Each structure stands twice: as C-alpha cells, then as structure tokens.
Image (tube, rainbow, N blue to C red; front, side):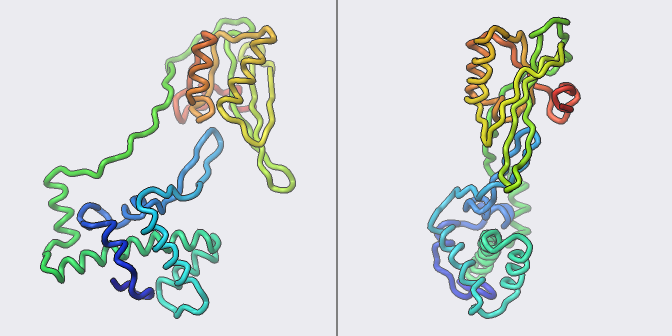
Length: 265
C-alpha cells in the first residue's frame, strides 16, 4: 500500500481495519486504534492526557514508527512531512509524531476505498454514507461512566453549625512549575473554614480519610455539597456517605452559584 510522501507500508493496517465500510468517517479510525488523547476534567482542571492506546497495538506501533521515519531529517520533503513539521514547531516532536500517525491512519482508510474500487467494488464514501443512514446503522458508542446523582432541587439549610458543609479544590503551582491542590472544607452556615488540606495529589480515598478524621474530632455534618469531580463522585465517597449516614448533594453541572460561597473562596 502506498501513501503520498511515505511509500509502501505493511499490510498490518489493512488486516486490522478489514472492511473500511465499518467506519462512517475516516477520522474515526484514529480513535479505533487508540491514537486520540484522553481528557481529564475535574473542578477547575481541564487537562488533555496521553493517548488511550485502545485497539490493535501492532498497527499503532507500525503507524508511530512510520511517523518517526517521516520526521527524520534524511527523509525527503513531502506535504505530509511539512504538515508534521509545523505541528512539531507548535507542540513538540512527540505530539507531532502522534498527530502524524493519526493522520496516516485517516489517509490509509481513504486509500482502502481506492483499492476496493480497483477490485471491482463500486461503493464510494458518499454511497456508503447514504446506505448507512438509510439502514439506521450506528457505531456502537462507549457507555459513559456512571456518576453519582444527587438532589438538584433547591436545598433548605437549617441555621446552625454543621448543617451543611461544602467541599472544593483550588489549584496553584510552585516556583519550579510543579502543581499542587488544596482541598477546602467550609461550613456554609458559620462561613468557617474547617480544613484546608494541601498536597500534590488528592484522591477520593484521601478525601474520605480526611472527612473521617474531622468527624472523629466531634464535628459531623448533616449534609455535604460539592461538584461532580471524580474525587467526590467516586465509589470511596459513596461508601463513606453511606457508612456515616451523611446526605451528599451535587450542584447541577454549569451552575456553580448553587454552591457559590465555596466556589468563590
């Protein structure tokens, strides 16, 4: 199989994809081969992580090695190499290699339609898309991770201490660039900061241990309010709220003013 600017490539890709008509769009092949980055969102954090590495590892390795060869100085110039060099200039060589491997997967998928046409298959991408829609087909979607669902109606709070606590994270970084976060625990009635736990990494189990220590000192909340961060919506926190018989409520996504005091602190 030939790619403009790359040359022949092993048939691993064709055997992995098998039938190119399985994919409605060529861009879906990159996700199928695990060449798309993960997305981590929690509170104020919105970070793009490493690639998912799903699908066939040998094909992904072959594409990455091909991208590495293309970006070598000794490789002759091509439009695809020029595009990858621009990406490397903006985001670095490692991300450029991943982006180029993903782009090669898209190009190879489109080339498979050409090979099918040469073998007598008249179906192009437009005809495949029309039949795809007429038959009501759809690529199986991954099930979203189940999140804890709490009460989203207005919550009445009794005017007494420990009636409701609010939890949230704040983030900053040291002079050397290393990031850290602080877990703030505030009493919504007295406006008192009950705790501020700093660390470079705070998991859901760590939050449960800190709350258990505070309850052991004699102050137990009747209700806790937080966002849908992974540290608060994990199994450890659900088990903690059940064991301590504490109502845990989540404010609606995109509505931080439902818990405005802790969000503004």
